[in-house]
Each structure stands twice: as structure tokens, then as C-alpha cells.
Image (cartoon, rainbow, N blue to C red; front, side, top):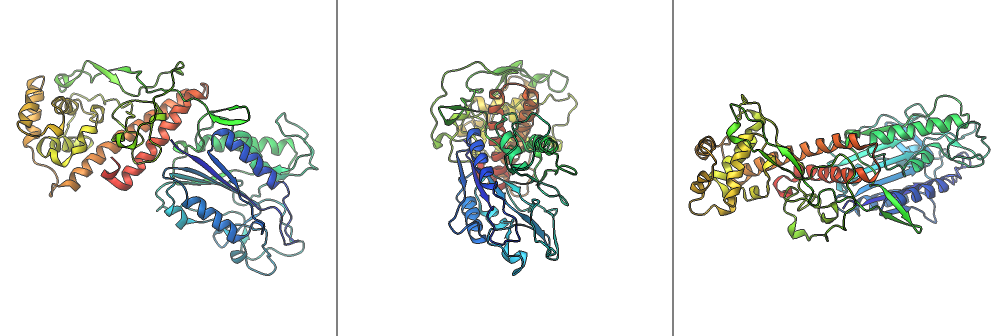
Length: 519
């Protein structure tokens, strides 16, 4: 299970009389903490220090937060206060900063932490930067040379996880706040006159409870709409600030919040998740018969992990969590998300079978084409050198997308898989073939040379990983399309989709980083 954790840091009471205080920041952070806990965050901390929000304190808290994360955690860091951009870097202005006596790069907090991000075991990190506000008043003093609004930062390409920076405003803009003296003239939102708050922070905290907001793209659109409404309601001048998100990840696949929640007796609890995969299976027609693959087709077989078009009916409580020793593959069997081990991210579940479907193959397809070459190599290894691919038995038929290769997989599986490789292993496989065409293909794969120059464990691992990566990516694509269809359904209908997508994305990342060790 993914653990969502947040660290909230706000600078409000500045020592330098030339820097306007931001007395509403503590209230913003408290409101945000409540909203995040209600949404399902397992831990939310508002950082505080008797010495104030200083560079050493902030750097220490952020570093500790990033390094203490558990493997696969989803982290959120919110930075609130005055902010500036100086010589290509973004800074948060700490409470003990004095612009008149020191340069910005020495007195402010650089929003960077790239090394800390590299060493963090977290699966994803989101920075909410509610800074660069109006109100830094240096009286007659000119701003230090080079000071301007947030620049166009680049997320370090070397980071091996999802990282996003969400800015309250775009370059050449300021992040506005509502003063207690501001009068609300229009609108029907839940903001009343007499309150003081950051427009960005209020928009985020109000929208966190919306379980329909799943990914960064939707979050950005909704927050921007709320900002514009508040800007208009309070008669702010000029164009409303524009939220800016910087990330190297597709915003549509970046899920930042847990699933839907309910509140019971002031305690925040996760809603009961639908056990979408615990025994209910759909049907799938096999590959279409044709001149090239009719003898390989299967009349029908279940799709494991198939998602119903509407929310499933209530079910009994899910089975107890399995121990890590059962965590062999995410493709073996279908159970609820609650049975996923929470201590590892390399495989999302020992028993969670993806809803993979075999591709319908054109009868004229060349099964030696690059699209199927890796699947063919893996089958050749399972037949010729089964001792190099012991993980093969943890794979499922749907991971072989060509109908002929799917038929070969069934033959190997029917005699007990590669673990039964002793004795007349190949003869038993050939005898299990349903017809001559499958038998001929088996013989061809048994004698065909490998493509690699040096056939060993390393080469075998590459084939195993590539087949798995492609199958996981197909399932992620299916889930995202499914999520788009169910967006208008009740929150509980999409909770499992969000959880499964996130888990598979973590598994995909682990496969790409650690290779065969992640299987």
C-alpha cells in the first residue's frame, strides 16, 4: 500500500522590517493539513522551530523528510512565504533574512535538494511552492540586482522517480493573497469577507477533498479555475496568477493524492476499497482465426483483473495481507489491493494479476519482427536453456501477444513449466501440442539459434525484463483509458484504478532501474 506523507513549511514573521509579514500563512498550513489528512495522507507535519524558519532548519527538515521516506512513498512538500528568483535559481525567503546586509543566495533557501532527491527511497515527490507573493516591501530600496520572478527550471534528468514542482504563479507574475480588509463582491464559493489567506493555498486545500482529481493535469486545471474565481470574486486587479507545473513526467500519469475517503467521528479513515480483482473474471475471445493463426487460437479464456464498466457491488472483507515470501510476480493471481505487501515496491503484488489481453494478430504478421522478437527469444530460452529463466513460470499467457507464441507458452505451462526441465522435458512439451502447426513451431524454436553472441544469465534476464516491461506498460495504458471512462462515476469506482496504476508505475520504474532483480 502506498503511504502519502506531507511536510508543510511556512515563513510568515520576518525579522527584516522591510519584508512585509504574512500572518495568514499559519492558518493556510493548518487548513492544508486538515485537508490532506481527510484525503488519506498517513502523516502531515507542519514544521516549526523556536528559532523561526531559518535556512538551516528548512534544509534539515526537508533533507530528513526525503531521506526517511519508505520505499515507494508519495511525498508532498509545501513551501509557503515570500520567494524570489536569483541568478537562475529559486529561493524561499526565510524569516531571518536581511536583504540589506547579505546577498540573496547566502541569506535565502535555495529550492533545489537534487542530491537529497537522488538518495530518497520515495517513489514520487511533489513540491507545492506558494511563494513569490505580493507584499515584499523594501520601501525605497531597489531590489537586489538579478531579482525577478520564478524562472524556467528543469527537473534533473538523472532523477529516477517522479518529481514535480507546482508553482503558485508563472514567470513575471506574483502569487496573490486576500487581506482581511478585502471585500468579496461576487461569487458563491466558500470564501467569506474578513479572512486572510493565500489564493493558491486556499484553492489547493479546498480541492484536495475532490476525489475526482486524480492526476497532475486535472489538478492543475481545477486549481487554476478556483484561483481565477477567487481573483474575480475579490476584485483583484490584472490577470489572475497562472499555476505552473514543472515535471519531466506525463501529467496524466502522475497521480498525487490517495483514493476517496470518508470521515467518521472526527477520525479520518480510508474508504473501503472495492475488491475489484478478487475472483470476478470477465471473458475474452481468443485471437481471431485466420490463415496464419487459426491453429493457435483459443476459443475463449478469462481476462484476469478485468474491470467492470460500473462500480462493483459490496463484497465481504478482503483476505488478510500475504507475507512477502509469496511476492513472486504481479501477474500470478487476482486479489484485492489490500493483499499487496507494503514493504516492497519492486513487484506491486505477489498475486495481483494484470488484466492483460492478447493482441489480435494479422494472419500475415511476421512473428520474427522486432515487435515480437523478445517474446520469441524468451520462449527459445525456456525451451533450450530453461535453467537460465527460472522466472518464466511466474509469467502468464497474456504476456505473449502473438497467438502462436501464446500457444507455445501453454504447451510449456501444461507440463509444469521450466521447473520440470529434467528428463524428457522437450519431448513432453512437443507431445502436449494440440496440432501439427504448434508442434512444428515448437521444434523450430527448440533448434533455432539465439540472437545474442553470449548466451548467459545476463542475456536471459534482458529478455525476461523486456517482455515484462511491455506487458506492464500495456496494462497501465488500459487502466488510464478505463479511468477516463469512469471519471463521472462515484469516487469509489475509481479508487482501485488509481491505486493499481500507481503500483504498476512503481513496478515499471523498478524494472527499468534494477532489471531482473525486480521480477
